[in-house]
Each structure stands twice: as C-alpha cells, then as structure tokens.
Image 1 (spheres, one colour):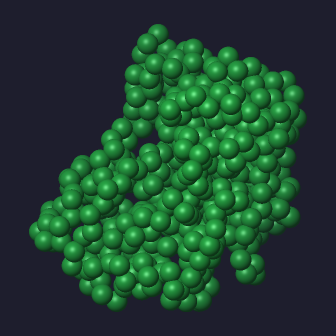
Image 2: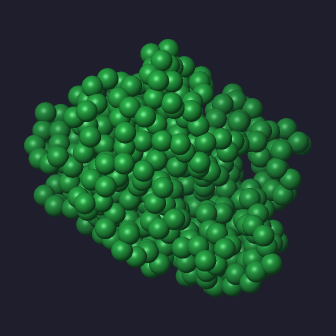
Image 3: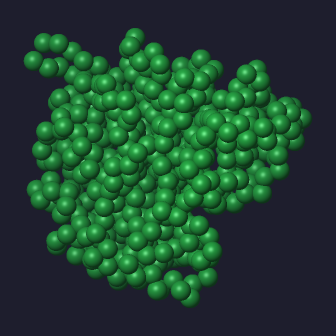
Amino acid sequence: MSTHNIAFTAPHFSATEAGTLILKQGGTATEAMVAAAAAISVVYPHMNSIGGDSFWLIDNPNQSTPTAIDACGRAPSDISAYSNEQHIPERGGLSALTQAATLRGWQKALEVDEHAALPLSTILAPAIKLAREGFTVTKSLQAGCEKLARVANTNDAFKALYVPNGQPLQAGQHFKNPQLANTFEHLAKHGLNAFYEGTLADSFARDLANAGSVISPADIANTQADVVAPLNANLSGINCYNLPAPTQGVHSLQIIGAVDKLKHLAKTDADWMHLIVEATKQSFTHRPKLWADPSVLGSDYKNALTDERLNELANNIDMNQAKQWPFSAEPGDTVWMAARDKNGQLVSFIQSVYWEFGSGVLMSEGGFVWNNRGLSFSLNAEDTNALKAHKKPAHTLNPAMAKFADGRRLAYGTMGGEGQPQTQAVVFSGYAWRKKTIEQAISDPRWLLGRTWGDTSTNIKVEQSLVIQLEHELNQRDHDWVSVDNNNEMMGHAGAILDAPTGLEAATDPRSDGRAIVTTAGTQ
C-alpha cells in the first residue's frame, strides 16, 4: 500500500468533506470538485446553486498550461421583453435572464479528464444525502434568508422553502431540501444532460415562465460550456493564470501585474495596501472596454496584459497619494474551491448565482434558485456590455492559479463580486512576494475597495485590526476609508492549495464556514 497526498478546500465544511471523500476513494480532482460543487449548492444555497454558472482551471502534471472551462450562461434568443424597460429588475422573473450553465461545466470537466471513471451516483451521493437528510443552517444562510424575506418578487416556491410561514431560516435549525435531493437522484440516474432536456428541464421552463422569465425550453436545451485558452501573465518568473472574458480575470491579472512593477517600493503593510488599492483603481478604470462577452472586445482587451500596458498602469500610481475614486460596484455571492488528487491534478473552481439567492425564483420541482447574472448587462445599446440575444454577460467569477519556476503550483480564489480581484491580489502577493504562508495570506486582516452587500458606497472598507495599525498612513495618503468588524464576510471567502515539491498545504478563510484538508489516499 502506497500513499499519496490529496487536498481540498471549500468555504463550507460539508463541501470539503464531500470532495475529500471522493479523493479518498481514488477519484480525480475534477470528480471531487463536482461532488463538492453539488454538496455546496445544498448547504450554501444563497451563495450558489445548480441554476448558475461555473468556471474551471484544471492543471495536470507535465501540462504546460492549465485547461480552462467557461460555463457561462448566455442571454436567451428572445429579449424583446426588455425593450421598454429602463433597467433590468433585480429579482423575479425578468432578472432570470441567462441560462444556467454550471452543470454543462461539470460535464465538460469530467469529459476532458481522461482519468475520471466514477459513476455519477457516487459523485452526487454526498449532495443527495445532505439534501435528503438535512444539515444545520449557518449564520451566513440565515442572513441570506432574512435579506430575501424583505424582497417582494420572489416566487411562492422560494418563500415556502426559505421563508416558511413568513419566518426566514434560523442558524442552528435542521433543514432539508427533498426536491433538490430528487433532482440530484434524477441526474445520477439519467446523466447531467437531463438537467437541460426532458421532464426536469420542462418543469424548470414552466417555473421560469410562470415567474415572467423569457428563458424558453430551447434556451435551456442550447446551454453550453466551452474549453477556452486561459489568460496568462508571466510576473517575475511566475506564470499566473485566470479565465478570459467575459470574466474579470483580466482585471485580476492586471492588478497583480501592476503591483509586480512597483513591489520593490513597498516596504510596509501600508505600502502594500496602498499599492494594491491603487492598482485596482487603475485596472477597474478600463472595465467598460475589458469586461464583456469576448466577441465584442477589441484591441484594449487583446493588449491588456502586455508589458507596455502593465507599465502604463503602474506609472499612473503615486505611492504617496491615493487617487479619487468615483465607482459603483457590483455585489455578488459565490463559492470558490480547490482540489488536488493523488495523481497531482490541481483544480481551481468557482460557481455562483450572482446576488444572494440569485433571481429569488425557485424551481418548484428542482429545489434550487435560478441566477440573476443577467443584471450585469446594460440596457444602453451603445455599451460594450449591452444586452443582446445569445450574448454572455460581464462576469465577476474568476478562479486563479499560478505556476512557479521551482515546480510549486498555487490554486487560489475567493467569492465576493468585484472584491475577487482585490482579494486575489492580497493572497497572491502575500504568498508569492511577501513570504507569508498561504494561511497567513488568507487570514490576515483585509480591506475592500467599493462594493459591499446592500450598499453602493465607493470608499475602502478596512477591518478594525488593520485600522489600528494603518489609520495614520491611510489618512496621510488621503484614502477615503471606513472601519468594519474583523473577519468580515464582505471581504470574501478566500482559499488556497499550495502544491510544492516539499509538500502539500491547504487553507480556508476564517470569514467562512469552511475547512481545508490535507490527507492521504491509499492505492493498492
């Protein structure tokens, strides 16, 4: 009997347990990730569901570049209902505007994994058990239910499941979702394609139509996921990877690319925070030309990660003075997870329904909510990200990975809407350039420029313990900031797996209900 190191990290311990169980059974990292993605859709339904999107980076030993999978739902074929709208509604049927592509992503990941051999019944078993037998409601889920209880246009099926008798689920409650268990059992028996065609798909189409959505049975059936070329930036000898448009992966890489140019000037915690905040501002300034369906992007996107462009961004940063920042940010609730299997396959994965509980439209026979990712579209026909039939929306999701010259590989990421590129920059620079452990890089106090849940303020939110250290320097450089509680969920749920020649490490965020496990899988 020989042993091999395996690792899994997720923002909810049940997902980590599901993924680790598959790895211990000899499954691949992609199989473990599908198991965890299903499980976390049960226990963190406010953060993600099978009615949303997913994105993958999969790296195998001796593979020069990771495989990237884009499972982003598109706008439907008929969008005439929006022609007289001033804005896309935030919740309800008209907010359910794009396809649910995440299961197409699961399918594609299993297809491209030549070692994937486990039956779907095994992979989906942990999710089925959680949904059928129930789990303990977390404070995070309670907060999501309380928020949606105040939203008028969720459908009756949603209210019955998550706000029964007008009372939101409470932390500590035991909660079951038998309809979702039935859905996973149906998929285990008939294959993932049964989500998109057949009786189950027909029931989704009926629920969407009843809520006023324009997504048709044909739109559901035509959902697809694509293997795409990942974005790559070589920063001081480290190959950094992320997902291409329509995701904000380009911003994640631009930010650390600009930081790389000036990191020699950063001597203190205040310097590093200032540098990453200012690099974020520089990159986000270009969002109107970088963040949309790839088919409508031009030379600005093509050149976004060139040395010339990164130098240009860096040259606009003053290490002693904060730039003014008028900025309305996009919220988002998401789960990021990573896995490493006994053969060395490493996966960085992310899945979401956009806002907490997405559209608030629950599939009555499916037991899950449909996403409201279409809110990312603009109804201004002149915008790059204007709503058009079959178009992908600007997408916040972006899983990250880095490969070092000495053989180390780092899978990392976070939830948090437009906070994702910022937190990724903090985690990556903390580990790669500031010599922190991955655990330190993730758990150390953080900040967030712009977006918070239910708030459109544009200042920097700084965790209290960091304020105590840096208040004077933040004021000296004219940052507009406000203090928030420590270990604040608005900072995202970050995580990482480090696969190094010297060993394997995994970390999860104390701001989540997560767990990171490094253990062994036996093979005969």
